[in-house]
Length: 274
Ligand SMILES: Cc1cc2nc3c(=O)[nH]c(=O)nc-3n(C[C@H](O)[C@H](O)[C@H](O)COP(=O)(O)O)c2cc1C
Image 1 (cartoon, helix red, strand yellow):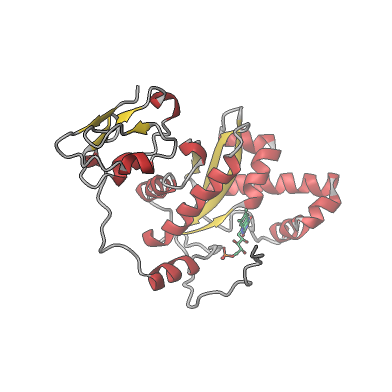
Image 2: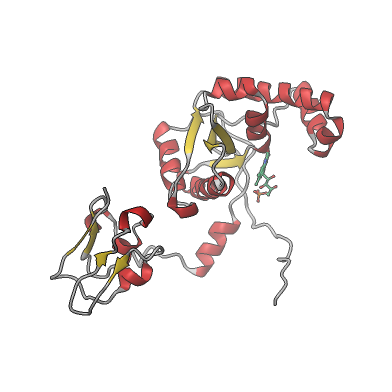
């Protein structure tokens, strides 16, 4: 059960919590009283914590979220424009990894940060399956190749469009372009019928990818990998995903072998101003 408590001593009665609430489930009836929940509070509260996070005096608390549990936003740690630009522009897809596993604690840390990404209605629908053993990553990469061979046989045009023959030819020549020699793969999955699974998972994995370099790690989306998870039942089974789930994204993770020296350029934004 969700409920709110407002410390009347600390509350400014400024209504900031009411303004910030996305679903308007908090009301302030007068400037004399503290805010209260509307009758439908439980039904419509997103549990996003905006009310607690925005309150300047720490007066607002939810039964599941106390202000003391929420670290203050440090002014010292706010990135400058230049820092933010370099941080964002220097993220690269990493495809060459050191032959060294990543500590489980670091992988857990990545996933914790990933879950701070936005999600539709704050649903946080994510489930993560982490392939921890490099031998399993190799075995699964081979299964992706099996799937690719099948697509090449059955749908040659589609296979050509997706560049599968080249990837398979590279595999046959001893080069692994599926997981790129990464020691780990993280698969993001959720209920296959959930309407925002793709968006929520992509956003969470973007958080993960941006955070990875701060732990000395590199990552790369495994587009072939998660396509195969959904299309090739043996891979879905070996990962042990729940029957009603779908993989909406996957990333390879490891310690990068190469160090990048320059920031890339991108095409100009295609914008129409109206
Ligand atoms: C949905 C998606 C799928 C991708 N799949 C793969 C993949 O299977 N293998 C790979 O090496 N890179 C993959 N990438 C990485 C892109 O190739 C990469 O983001 C792009 O070339 C830009 O380079 P950058 O990420 O280093 O800036 C994928 C990226 C996305 C967003």
